[in-house]
Image (cartoon, rainbow, N blue to C red; front, side, top):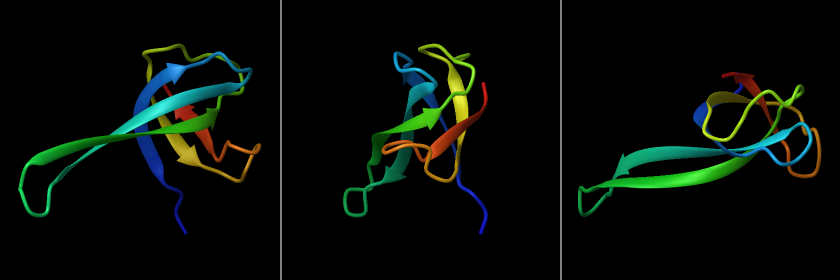
Length: 76
């Protein structure tokens, strides 16, 4: 099964080897037909602490690295 890849913006990098990435998705409301924006935060593994707040990154699913980390950063 292929691993999911998402694109988002780094919102926090205060933890060692971890970044928090906010991923936004857009969809049409089923009844109102209005475009709705929803965002979700993912904690991703950043091996070398190279990403800063505001960077756009791509994250990929991986095996659990810790209690909350199930994603790893691919590229900036």
